[in-house]
Length: 264
Image (cartoon, rainbow, N blue to C red; front, side, top):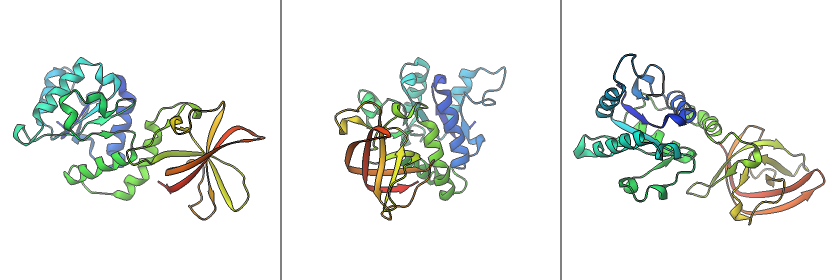
């Protein structure tokens, strides 16, 4: 049985597969260390799968519940979550439980549960995945820390784990520190003293009082302040000022002026 138990809803199989791959390829965790019932080969044919889950839950060191809207609607998932909560803590088996929230589920959605006192992480947060990596390294669940490889694989994982929608339907929300993560999708020709890049998605609308028809968002700054970018780059940025403009070739373009920006 694996030392890491991934508790999840089978309806979230795409996210589960992405997480499994990132744990192995991005974090260096061996496949044999992970128990995940949705992955082929985890449960042997002819075995009592419920008994296998009970044994795996008892024998593992860490439980990572992937808590989604589907998870919250599943009685079976709640049974696993309850078992993990009972077994967590130094006095009750010494198991660690690190919930990963995903999709529209937020911490406030669990405020009326025993999990309300637990520190939780967000699957779609770059910073939180870095925290998870650090904790896995500290717990000796990663055979050898390789931070450069982790940083190389993280942006691609973030891009895949986010909703696969048209750019205009992808809403970018800030993390708890006020940073946004976005992918560069287009470079706009501007005078040499400036740089202008279209981002994939729209920054959350409550900052502007709503969106205009056909609105697109562009990062705009003076050349030399930040490094030049290319299509496909992921950037982490903060901003305090933006301006909605209309150009002959663009219907409604919002220039976002970053106060901090770094390629990741």
